[in-house]
Structures are given as C-alpha cells and as structure tokens.
Image 1: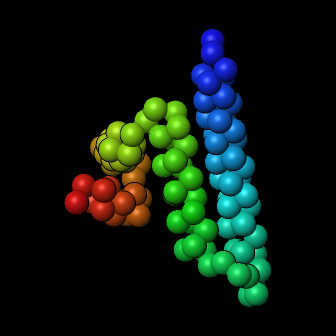
Image 2: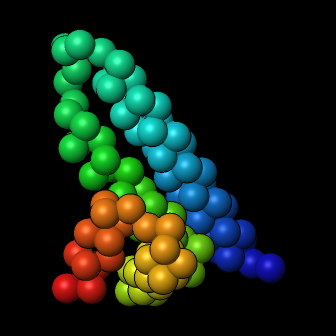
Image 3: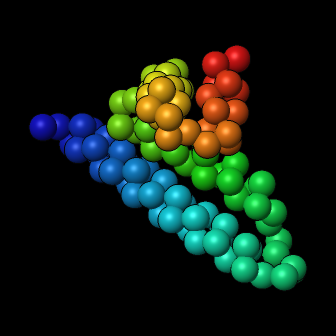
Length: 99
C-alpha cells in the first residue's frame, strides 16, 4: 500500500470517528435539554437536525447513499405499518417520506 492510500484510509477512519462522537454528543445534548427547564443555547429542533445530518453523513461514509437510506427507512416503516404495529406518528412519517 502506498503512503497516500494509508493517509486516505486514516482520514476516512478519523472522519467516521468524529461523526460518531458528534452523534453521541448531540444525543446526550438532546436528552439534557429535555430535562432542563430553560437556559439551553440550542433548541431540540437544532439538535435533532444535527442528529439527522450525522446519520446521513455516517451512512455515506459507510457506502450508503442518501436515496438508499431514505428508501430503506420507508421500507422499514411500511413493514411496521403492514404488521399493524404502527403508531399514528409512524404512519405520518411514512406518508412524509413517500411524498
């Protein structure tokens, strides 16, 4: 292996580890603001958006493109709906993804 390919691999691993840390940090941040009365710099919406971004970027780092992630998510929701285990929120999310 050449030094350039080793550097590329190291960069990819570093990027994945950074995204995983951000995902954990944002998850903890979301749980933290849900227990605080007020005084947070970020809103729940901001943190949830950051979580979604991290998930999409992690998927891409693992070779899963955005369209495939959307399609798989919709498929899982559809299966849930067909098995009669779906909540109204799950059905609503499926309708949103199918638009």
